[in-house]
Image 1: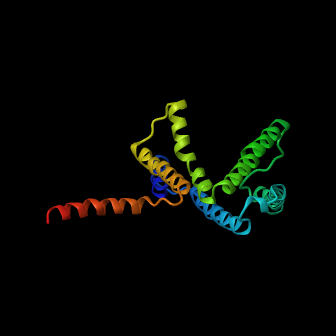
Image 2: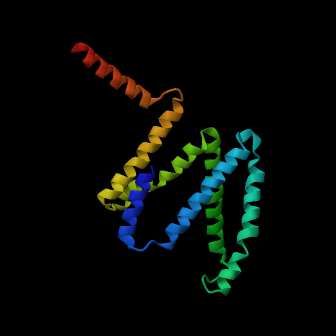
Image 3: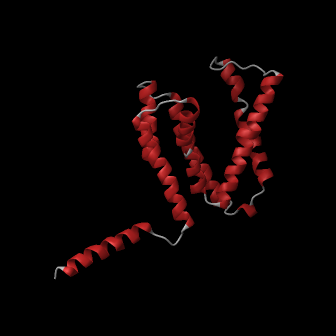
Length: 193
């Protein structure tokens, strides 16, 4: 999985520039914080029965408002980002995007965490790279380099492998493979004696 993401990211850097963009650094920091969030959430709330979704999302919104809102005027004062109030059309689009793109997707993801595991839900998020790539190929006719296809392969196979292993909890394919090889080698050695 990680190898696939690294290959796709390296190819993306080759296409854009040789300098690591600031967005990549922010993405890595976000991934680390996201992993901490998942571990702490699963530690504090082991099952969905013990969680009040309304209160959880209320506190997420409350803390985002308290912590992030003061940053907007600071960005405007320092000239890094101009701040202006949106018109009604932009406000409507932002509200729909916030409800569907953030609240609904986070709710479905969190529900998926409780129905399966945090590992499965997080791995399913990483499928956005190969699935977006396939939709781009199908709808827009975009051509990607071979390295991106090679990078997408481990992402898909790791998700399928983890899905199979979590579905069949008592199945150990590595041990079965080793036993099969041992039987084959033992039979050959036994036949030549």
